[in-house]
Image (cartoon, rainbow, N blue to C red; front, side, top):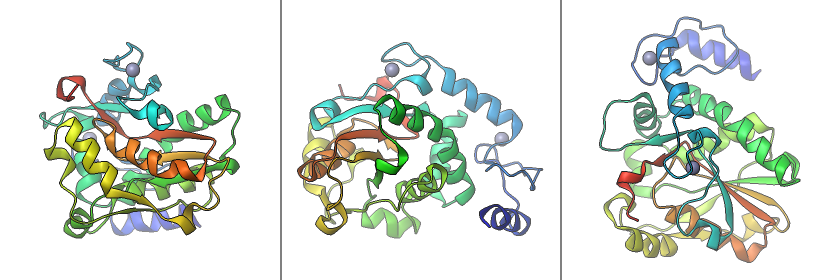
Length: 254
Ligand SMILES: [Zn+2]
Ligand SMILES: [Zn+2]
């Protein structure tokens, strides 16, 4: 059902490469397709590039950033490093596309890219997808209105399909908070902590569960740290952070 829907959608709206915009040819491939062959090679190379924090390939690095461990996030799964100042680079263009325009194909592609690392992490923790719960860090109401969608929610929904997990849990983001990307780390931290709230009726069953916290990009880690802190009273057994990209270190505030 899902596959035939994807094919019909492809016939009506032929998918284009999320990085360079060329039409993707094989509309009948069963796997989600978001990149042309040439961009896929560059994407894979970016995943293999050595992480600035540990020297491992970025896609293998699970090191959380800044205050994340203090708030119970033991691992951060990512695919590439992101350099907001640079327009070029397949990774950057994928992030711009993910934020700018809702694409089920791109969300499904990124979910399929993230799923093996998430699954591996669950196995290492002695957890199973059945005992895991996906939670997304919502984007601001203002941004959601401007773009018409929430990319972290979309990515989270795609992950729940990919991993065969139950319906993701929603958090609340208060309106009136300042825009995270305009702030320094300490300001981001304070801003994020007052911005996010858990919804008690949605979080009632988190006790003993493995929470998988999803965001599109992690910069200082303050958004995911704030979300994890707000979920802590519901006593999840463990929290894993998941994002498509982390900020390259020259852009970090610390
Ligand atoms: Zn391309
Ligand atoms: Zn690393």
